[in-house]
Amino acid sequence: MYMRVKSKIRRLIIRRPLEHEVDILAEKIVKAYSRSKADRLKLRLLARDVLRLLKPVMSYRDLYSLTGLPESVLCRYVKGSILPSFEQAVKILAKVALSVDLNYLLKDLVEREKSPVIDLLRVLKDPYISKLLATIIMLELVGKEVTKVIATAEAVLPIATLLAIEFNAPVVLVKRRSYPGIQYYNITIMRSPKDIESLYVDKDLISRKDKILVLADVVYTGRTLEAVLQILEKSRAEIVDIIAIMGLGRLWEERLKPYNVKVLSIVPFEF
Image 1 (cartoon, rainbow, N blue to C red):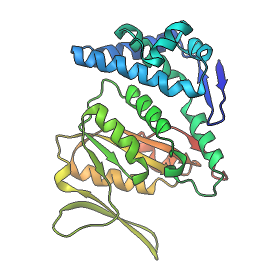
Image 2 (cartoon, helix red, strand yellow):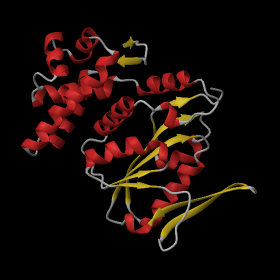
Image 3 (cartoon, one colour):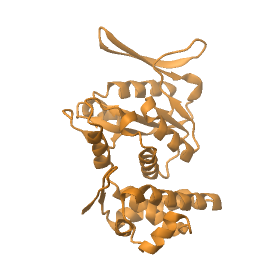
Image 4 (cartoon, rainbow, N blue to C red):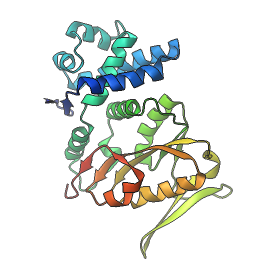
């Protein structure tokens, strides 16, 4: 079952996850955040922040339908009068992570741009959307160890930075040009005889001990992301997960199939 929530700014579709789905994710969240008082407090603050992110596009009645918590309690959480308990915070975050339809949200944001070119910097210009995306991605990765976040393009740097803060891991940007005196892992992509692109990753920023999260912006043919992954293979670091914010058409699927890339939203090519 899905619930459509509209506002003048943006729209959301909320699905109702099965109880066992919520229980499984909740268990992972508890394991990841119950190691210290600081971690437990951090999770409670995160639950409050997520409710604040959702409030501009959802009424308290909608939030009640999503979380099952009384509207009066939700109001006090959103206003910061009180914090949810650790147990309530776990339930709130598990339900939000499994309920918000990112595919619909991102397609809607693209539609609103009315541009022939999908520029993720424009699509995600609202910092609150970036924060919501980063939070949901982080919750889906809960329990995994990440020591480096690889941003394949500048467009995903805001989300990569938010994730890096949560994982306490540095951000490494894939560069399009090299600088003297720095050693790189690099690769060249020949798109046509006149269109050649080189990609660079600083060698001293990645080691074989690293556990890497790769964050890509828009994939079309998948050639650039494949090249980035080939660069990272040279470092012998462990790739924990690969997430692309948006897929343009489905031309990329066959090329990226061996890498098990997670694409949050797929937009038709004719869009």
